[in-house]
Length: 201
Image (cartoon, rainbow, N blue to C red; front, side):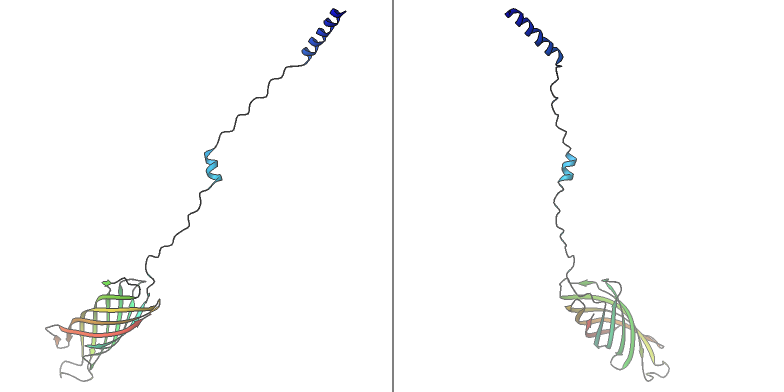
């Protein structure tokens, strides 16, 4: 009886094991490769704040100036800068020469040297100016009452900036000129010297 029961139990176990399929174990998960580009995109570098550097000091940007002259030429002069911040300037003059002769003139000047201080500037500006001189009476019977002069001189100017659009100026004009008229050209140059003061804007 025991032997019969053992045989039946063995046959049952063999049947169950034949009907139950063997399953493979689950495959191991392989980690995804790391993309270095994605890391750089996900974590952008911190932005560096921009630093603004001012190239030039906040000095007066005068485009024109009026000067009052006293000396060999006594009168009013207007100068205008050619181009923003350029070294060249044009000038016109109206007044008197040697105190008694009505005179008008036009010229050009170049700033050859200037200090870089933010409020006080020392400028050296050579220039060439042509003048027309008129006499209200005939100085000579046959020579008429008009003449001219071509003057090569240098302006030595000290300027003080009161604001970004206003400055004061004090200076000295020295040079020499050639006089001419209907009677010919004066055979020697005439020294020229004037002091001036004015303002720019």
